[in-house]
Amino acid sequence: MTFSKYKRLCLVLLLPLLAAGFICAHAAWPYDRYQSVLCQPFLGSENCRPVGHIDGPLYKSIKKDTDKDWFEIWTYDEHSPTSTSAMASGRFIGGAEITGALPFSGEGHEVADFMKRNLVGKQAMVHLGFPTETAKSSAINATTVLLYCNDLRYEAEPGTYTSGCYGEGWSGPVTYRIDSGPSRPMLDTLQTDVWRIVDEKKSDFRLWQVAVYPIFIYGFLLLSFVGWMIVKATRFVKAG
Image 1 (cartoon, rainbow, N blue to C red):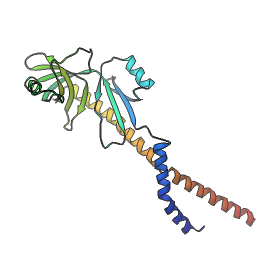
Image 2 (cartoon, one colour):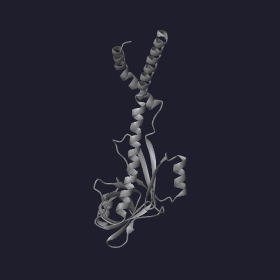
Image 3 (cartoon, rainbow, N blue to C red):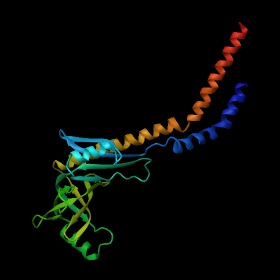
Image 4 (cartoon, rainbow, N blue to C red):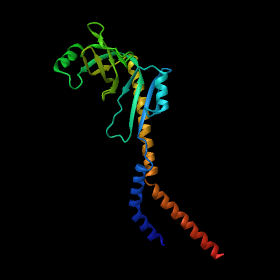
């Protein structure tokens, strides 16, 4: 076979081989796009690590050996090829100012009015995670409230966060700002560590795609090279 014919053969086989690799990658060798991440403070920073599935032994071991006081970190991205579920151990956040409060879907107008009147504009101490099942958000004084919340979402504007909080007779997402104090760098460090692991998972998936999708093309080229070497070796032996 001449080289020009071989090139045409490669062009003809390119799409079928790539399609076969894609099908096998999702049917025979599927990539686990999901991961769980647990974060805990460590030496003034954060120790965030992938721990496998929530039903896996490492995840269960860490959750069992530490406090039950955990909160979820929002990492959802509808455009991401991978999925990460992140949680961090409970902690207090100080120096927050509440900028918005809405009830969860299904609550009445009375709850929305109550949250707006009693939360928006006030200073807040935010406890992320529930130390006890009966913990409820409450007023500390006329200008400050204590919020108990079970998740954390980083808003687009730096220093702005939203958490699902629960009080007596109300519940819903509360948005707050932190401009100064030790809580802001702690939350920023937590975000950096979590998103680093999220990006590593995406990169790992992209490398897996590059390695696996064209696997039959790689195999065809390897077999072609081996066949070419055999022909060369045969001709060399006959010529001798």
